[in-house]
Length: 173
Image (cartoon, rainbow, N blue to C red; front, side):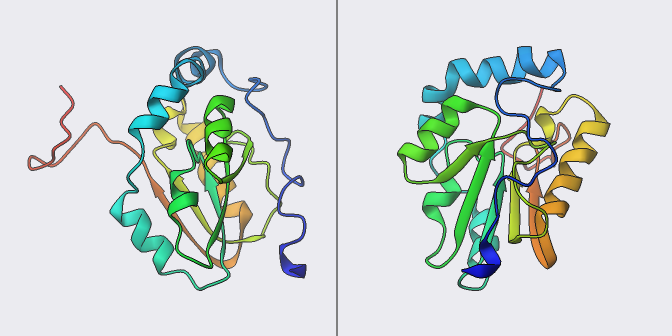
């Protein structure tokens, strides 16, 4: 499809899982953890979050979606028919697992996505922002999601928050 040409490769200097411009604290406490724990982590992440499923289901058939921080590719393999996800993640072990499961995924940093600008109808970044060590890097990751979207595209970003409603199952002590 002509409009889909050049989805990958024309990014702003993608930082693969090797570290590149990633701060040492993220290399040590985020990337090293996920590299070591990828198989176990992937085995515990199998059920798509309902809000993500609803977002993907609302997209038109033929939509192309960037999954920034795709992990084990669980949203790619659960996408509705006619919705194609292309993922990137900083953990090469998770990328291997995602591709083994049939996802389209490449190594890449959320702050410098390996995708061309304005090519995606939708974008996801689920449980990624809280892994970035500074507000500047979190803002850059949000800007990257916006950059890859075509005009009028839709995005869904979700992150863990320390503050939770009293009724939440997830409390942080």
